[in-house]
Image 1 (cartoon, rainbow, N blue to C red):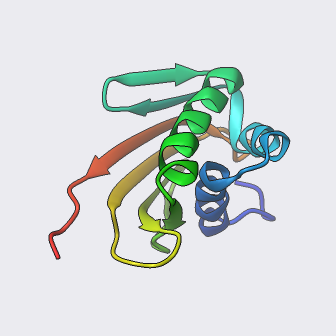
Image 2 (cartoon, rainbow, N blue to C red; image 1 turned 120 degrees about the horizontal axis):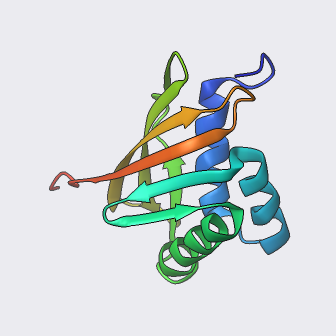
Length: 128
């Protein structure tokens, strides 16, 4: 990671990309976050490259943010170990309310601090 980018800021920028409503800003955020050949893995889905990453983020945004009224937030627990960053995120109602979904990101970083491989784990949501 570069000195100007902390791993906590990376987590915040990551979740912000999934909330971004402006297509050009979302595309720019993806380019800043992932390598051009960067990968994202969740369940049985694997996408590779900026175009596929953009489609993945758009799909999630349309379903959860635009259509579902949710937003994603970092849990504030980002940790760096060598070239890997781990953090949890929450999907919460934009208007306030209990956590609707939990996730864990495990990011392998390239030398320039961008994401080479992104492993996303969807976690069980605790019952209220």
